[in-house]
Length: 195
Image 1 (cartoon, one colour):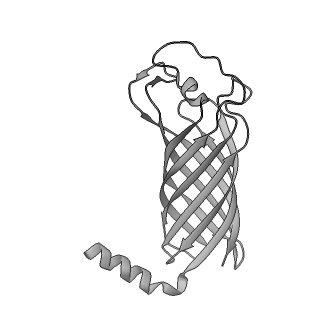
Image 2 (image 1 turned 135 degrees about the horizontal axis):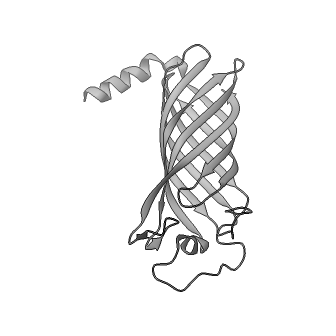
Image 3 (image 1 turned 90 degrees about the horizontal axis):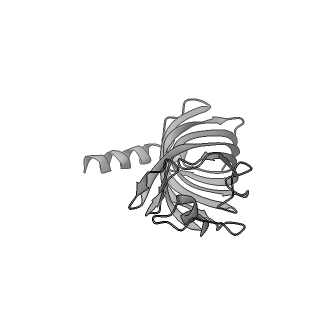
């Protein structure tokens, strides 16, 4: 009850600080089970009910085959949706924040026929080549910098946590009987407009 009252007071004291932000970003994401960096372009809407709290809806499209030049691609493109909260103080033109989000990463099927060895469990690349939608989570932080009265620059760095399907064996050749989690870096930089 006390935390609910505190949240209400926090929001009501800063009602004048409510805003909506719309922006675009470039994303660089890594995968725990595969080498290479996945590059994408996305957009984000943020509702700030107070100066301290932001509610994000972040969509990113990764258009290229993955992995890239160094391996046989198991995915033609990826689409990611993350929905979460940022918390941090507004200090003049700078707002450092921590963030947590949950959502999905939809990976398309392999762009070309994908040869797999007939073993059980299969390698994770073979499981992913059919096209998978993975639960995705993010924990991290960042900074938003006001560049003018209504525009801003935003940088986010987070641990992207993907839940891979199982049974499969990963890049480390460890057999996973069930679905398993992998951690990797996700970095975004972008800008936008505040209303």
